[in-house]
Amino acid sequence: MDRNKLLQEVQNDTEIWDFIIIGGGATGLGTAVEAASRGYKTLLLEQHDFAKGTSSRSTKLVHGGVRYLQQGNVALVLEALRERGLLRQNAPHLVKNQSFIVPNYEWWEGPFYGIGLKIYDKLAGKLGLGPSKNLSREETLDYIPTLEPDDLNGGVIYYDAQFDDARLAINLMQTIFDHDGVALNYMKVTDLLKANGLVSGVKIEDQKGDHNMEIQGRVVINATGMFTDEIRQMDNPQAKRLMKPSQGVHVVLDKSFQPGESAIMVPRTDDGRVLFAVPWHDRIIVGTTDTPLEEPSLEPRAQEEEIEFLLTHAARYLTKDPEPEDVLSVFAGIRPLVSPEGDDDTASISRDHTLLIDPSGLVTITGGKWTTYRKMAEDTVNEAAVVAGLDERESVTQNLRLHGWLKNTDAAEPYELYGSDALSLKKIAEENDGWGEPIHSNLPYTPAEVVWAARNEMALTVEDVLSRRTRALLLDARASIEMAEPVANLLAKELGRNEEWQQQQVEEYTELAKGYLLTG
Image (cartoon, rainbow, N blue to C red):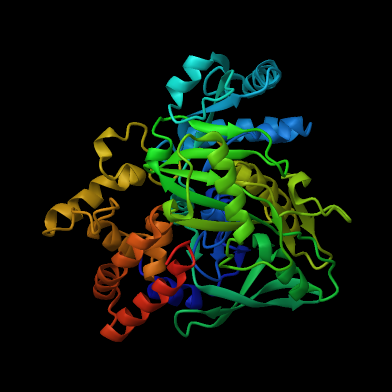
């Protein structure tokens, strides 16, 4: 996948695009897959790398949202449970069943949460992943041996799904190409083009070269998540701000803190949020927080009180109390919440998506969450096709197998996450001495994966590889820093870069990754 060649083709293409989509996170990528799979001429533009922002920083869950059931938003839960089932079916190499334990320390919690989760099961219908049930104290500790035993009465087990968010984003990008669309990273939209007061295209700057250009489109879709307001104000400087960004922080711990296969779900923390401790890639992710922010950022940083909150709550439920030095990585993501007038409580703002069409014809899709990305995309393309005056075409994404689809991933080991691409990756590893061995003893990633990312997944930087093509940065930030030099060396050979570029890449990545460490 040669980016320079792609840029040349886009620059020389005189035909108007049906859809120009701004934003390469879950929503933008999903919308581009939706449009391209219907046969529309589709171009996606991302200012940084795919899933650089919120979409690579989730709690890694594909879920109906037990919390939304508590809030009484049954419609959202129904939609999310249905989409969870479809995503499990369309990307089985990335989306897996996950059991969750709700520990009960008060007498009323067992019946209360037990009944609530039975309703959750019923709403899932035939797309359910397994029935919930009440557990005795002994059964609960069998599932999670490191759960705090004092005053434990029992628990409730239920089932949701988990996934690798950035890997799914990369597969969506590849699916766009599989359906003759184009997706480009590091292409920043700096302005909207207009004709007779209507949005008619975009002006873009190449962040990695000199392919600056103006491109015409029948409809432009703003799917920029936390940067939604910036694009809307390009269209209309007086546009009222929609977004109320909220930061969610996660800490990553060694598996010894929770060695079982089940996750812990605490339905209500001190600030009214749900807390999860979820096994993921042989680590434990504990999250999340809800901190209102004034301004969005591509690299949000966890605040001291957020980390303290997570470690305190983890200690409350685990026999082994995590200390700051136990944290392998800490990452923050910004929820693109659409705020009702005057609502300052970000924990209570709905995760329903919002679809707007401005008088200029600019289409904006925002809000929502990873689980419902496909439905958001379907709704958006339906509306945008009308704005563009395009022929109506049926959606095919409910049963669309995403790039990499592989039902049985046993044959793909140790590259299961790559699904049907695993055999090609294995071939690269076998044909080059040492390329199948881990680069670092604390992480599983190999030189073959770095080379694959450069050749087939549009990775252009050390950060692209260590943060999103692999998950090294989130799993062990310190080990990822030690991987930066060999990764830069491999990338330089693939991308035709010199030693100066390598050195700069290592320095930039090291500086970035230090922000994921709690201790020096």
